[in-house]
Length: 204
Length: 204
DNA sequence: TACTCTCGATAGAACGTTCAGTCAAGAGGT
DNA sequence: ACCTCTTGACTGAACGTTCTATCGAGAGTA
Image (cartoon, rainbow over all chains, first blue to last red; front, side, top):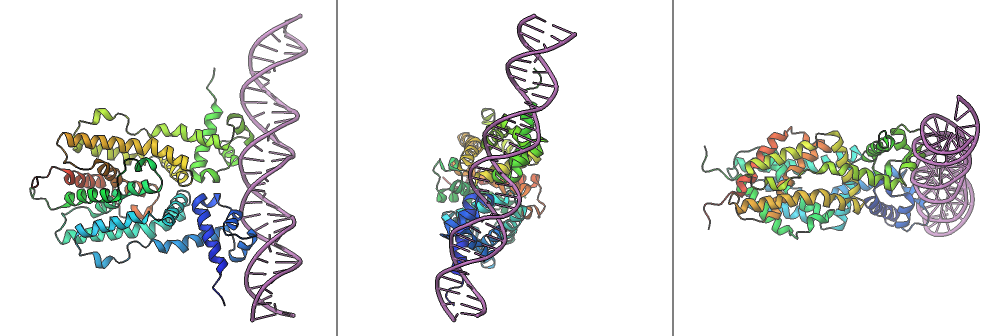
């Protein structure tokens, strides 16, 4: 039997590298074959019906990796001083990996032009993350640890506060320039967020 | 005299539409010519040396529009309860325009693969917005309206809190689903932000 | 032999770009 | 008024290249 299609994995890996660097249109069957050290681009058509299918399989093979918030229930009752910095730290450190950066580039880049990709990304990642944060915020309000507020907005706000820092790591050197570290950023924004949502003592 | 190159503007307009819809690689000289109602793609080469130059001119012709924060000095001393909602409102309403959405799509999409575009975008837009917010926060701390904190982080945080909402308007239906309006979002996040940064009364 | 996998060659289409040439409008001389 | 020459705007055809995808032949193993 040997391994189940050594070649297949090799082509998928190469296709991922090419697509993420150049986009769907920019990457060519030939360049993917070259990256995969194939002697002929024709071999790709033995394993995949066409370029489109290869692209889809690349996405599908990598998206499971992005299961960031996998175990929501166990976190729901923990206090925000503990949970939020953890999520933030995990979230930002995600983008330290070269492979994840490439994946993000690929997804975002293609999502701009291909609505289907945007939808997959939106449902697979964003919806889950925001959904978890909303339930978490709601639960914390219920427990009296946070004041009453619109959790749809606070969930957006929390994840959003981290985005410019993530963007700096991935694409925009201009953001990186002031040298703010992840830890410093997390400390400040979690501080703002928690003080901003703690029970009001002076108003009815 | 007549108008200064009617055709040129016509081609630039068409190129903008095509590039923003399909990206640099996806848009073709022929499709741009068709969109511009030219009888021959060759005419494009009378006004622009090559596709690359046409793309650059499209970017340059549209980026001036993005001068969002143009008059920083006059705002510096106004109180955050007034300034921040204004900035937020202006920022989010920017993405109501179809043209701006297309421009953002174009810029972000290309920035993923072309470092030069990312740099232009980073310096022209992000750096200015963040730069303004940093000076503004610093000034407000100086005036005693906000507590001492790392303004690099709070500037990121403020603009970041708005990003998911903007993303929802532009690409991700999944974010839009919960029906949170811009006004609701702004009210909540500005509230969190201001309470999160208001002078501490119980600590040294 | 039969089946799986690999490759070189290449078809066919689309790409960016070039080029020779058309056409209307205007300048200049007569 | 008439002819000539020039010029800017534009076009259709074609160039060379590159793209995706196909095909038939051959190698390797059972």
